[in-house]
Length: 107
Image 1 (cartoon, rainbow, N blue to C red):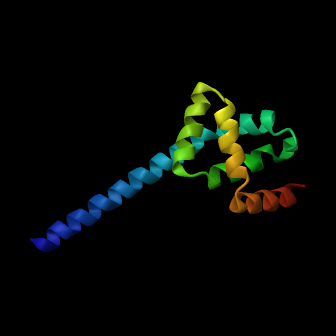
Image 2 (image 1 turned 180 degrees about the vertical axis):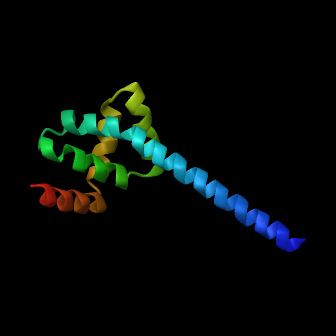
């Protein structure tokens, strides 16, 4: 009986993790348009051929709460808060490494 309860609990936790991962992937996909628009308009120093690569780095390094904000901005429109969130993510060391790596592979 106890084994069955433990197995059921493990399966339930696995299902929750799968749902959470799916929600995270969906949110990151939704956030791409806001990030792309923000980089293209508010970060003119980023060359056009690098916008998509930079967007990928920002999305990959965004925290869950940031992903939710950016996904919301994809529907509600980019504002100064969006620019601040993207700028904050771009300034992180892990994002900077990603940006350098992708820039050198494209240019």
